[in-house]
Length: 94
Image (cartoon, rainbow, N blue to C red; front, side):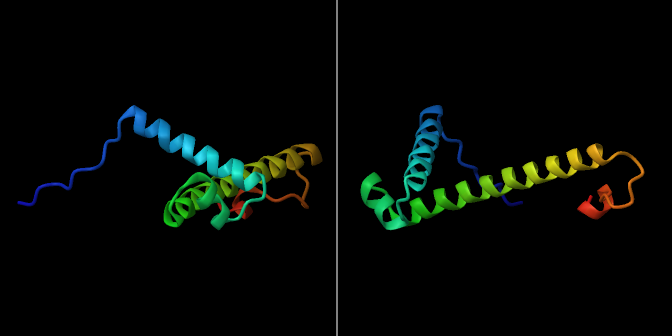
């Protein structure tokens, strides 16, 4: 029988550092810095900076999807029940 692979369990301090680094990368992005400049300014490897940028983009895309979904639901409520021109939940992919 094979033993399970141990999963990393970072300490609270490590998690706080990850979150701080992610915030620092996001701040740089908001200021218009490109990936190369972010690496230089934050003294961070290109691979790590890229990981944070991917995470930030993924979170922003999810937030945008949620905002769009809320807007669609608000529109549906505003137009009233029974309106044929409004999407129903099945058209949203649920």
